[in-house]
Amino acid sequence: MKTKVYIIKDPKVDEKKIVEAAEIIKNGGIVVFPTETVYGLGADALNEKAVEKVFMAKGRPQDNPLIIHVASKNVELYAKEVPEVAKQLIDKFWPGPLTVILKKKDIIPGVTSANLDSIGIRMPDDEIARKLIELSNTTIAAPSANISGRPSPTDFQRCIEDLDEKVDCILGGEQSNIGVESTIVDCTVVPPIVLRPGGITLEMLRGVDSGIQLDKAIMQKPQENLKPKAPGMKYKHYSPNAKVTVITGERKKTIEKIKEMVHYNIEKGKKVCILTVEENVNEYTDGVSIVIGSIKDLSTVARNLFEALRKCDDLGADIVLAEGYEEKGVGIAIMNRLNKAAGFDIIEV
Ligand code: TXA
Ligand code: MG
Image (cartoon, rainbow, N blue to C red; front, side, top):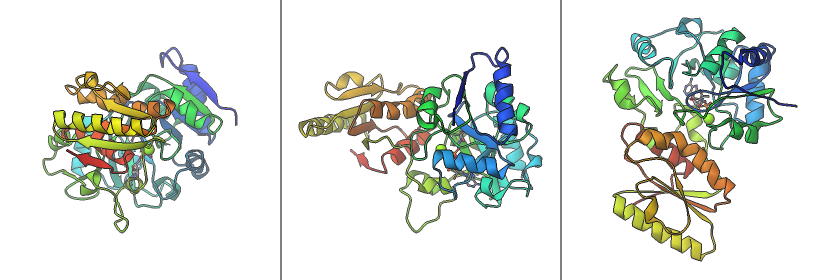
């Protein structure tokens, strides 16, 4: 299949391209589009055949449900019950990087929700994304626009790398500002539970409802016998081809341990990449250091994390050593992604 790639500098000036992409969605095609979290691969969520194409293009397991994307807060169109706390969360954080899980209406086909009776819904804070949804005149089901298992794309070039000739159209916008996928809150239970941490932090959510809890599974290695609440959490994720290890603990000790591991691996003839921050980069003299942000502003780390993992592949790294972060604020989302990328190979010093 020939993929149309349209770069959009200004959604108003380039509206024609979004109109064309919306026509593709209406006709049952699949389209990559930018969002503030990561790029998404979208289809008409109400069209089974179109949604199946999304699973095919990504190589995604069928039992992993999709999030539907809306351009209005009128979630009653798709949700059977909207608890008060969900209304408040929507009011406060939409448009933005928050997905609420609600009981679904029958209008949402089983392929979209992987036959669950609930559905994740979010309104992206990206003009191109919302325009596309509005013009498509439906709700758009969209997982991240990567081949299943690879790091989510925050840049349209990475979408081309993964999905060229597998999708009908790619809308290229700016680099995703948040850089990790949306926070997912299950609002079908009391108290609501965070199933996936993201840009909307636990602290922010608790400003709305102090009872909101983090799912314990978030920071643990998935257990064979335990069925995760978000089916996607059991799969290997965000992995570059290299072997990733996370080293956490006190700053000086972390740096020492990483240096030791760099030398050990270089001796063995391995190519080593270090994921570090601007405050620490000068400590490392060997291996290839990739600066992903600043310890003083973890949102920079979240923004650059997935791109850095992909860069390790570009560089042909065998081993990736990543510094750990404090599990606070957006640090929880960063550590969740890093731990998964590492297959929970974590060294505490
Ligand atoms: O930021 C995002 O959410 C991005 C952009 C494109 O919007 N999308 C995204 O979709 O990350 P995806 O498919 O890569 O991740 C969706 C996650 C999966 O782990 C899935 O299992 C979980 O959401 N999920 C979806 N519906 C669910 C439901 N009804 N109950 C529990 N978990 C659900
Ligand atoms: Mg994904």
